[in-house]
Image (cartoon, rainbow, N blue to C red; front, side, top):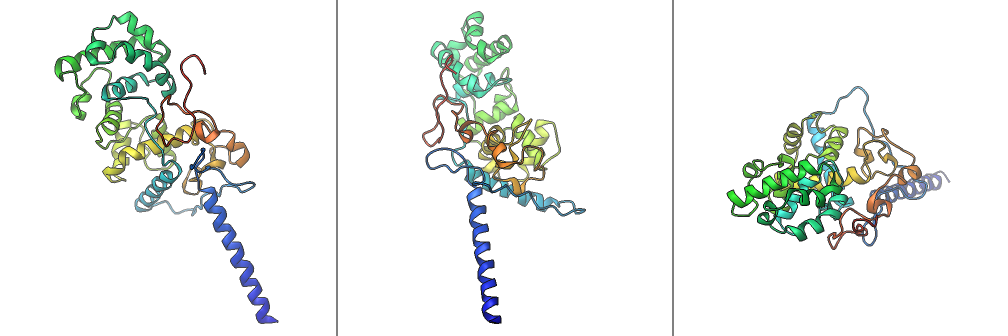
Length: 310
């Protein structure tokens, strides 16, 4: 009887461990439709808070390992991560990225079809009547300043680069209205040159994850770049920004529905209740349309509506 009781206890323990492993596996998936997995706990399962060792600060090596694991897990959550601006060529991406300042990619995507129909090339846009250009981009906000930048960069492309967008950082940042962030977006997504895009989402998340405590975008870029191989920079940017827009929001992160919660030192800053957290998810994670009118074929959500229908 003693041996049988011990065997029974071993079987119960083994079964519990198996169920725990299955639950952990299920909770690590991403949301979406089709083949994408839902990034939320199943049923009444709660996301586990990260284990902390009081009094023992994380070493740099441990932080790097944790950061790289976060990147790997985000790659599984968002295998379809992509730039969320509609574009067909480097010029369109450059213009769309300039327009995206202080507004959403959705609003830019709803605005650019008419803009590019009127001005498909740098030569066309450089010759635009300022007032007409301003009216076309008005929905994106700050339209006078943006129109000035578009006219200036288009003229520079026409006069200095033969009407082509240059594929070098040093050349791009000389264009009116183009900073390092915009240049990295264009290089990474139009030319395949690795770069880290430090927008507000990226900066917020890497500080929450304790990859850096820097506020200046260039310093953030440098410190994060030192953690990852150069080949990862562009996709890392997409994954982090995707997560920031969908789960790890500025005001109320959906901690209870976060698939990387066990790796996050800031877990608990947002809603930890799984059901309440799921209601905070956005875009395809929340079952709603994404930001692109023309998303990639593997995107699991619905296309965004045209201007005036949302």
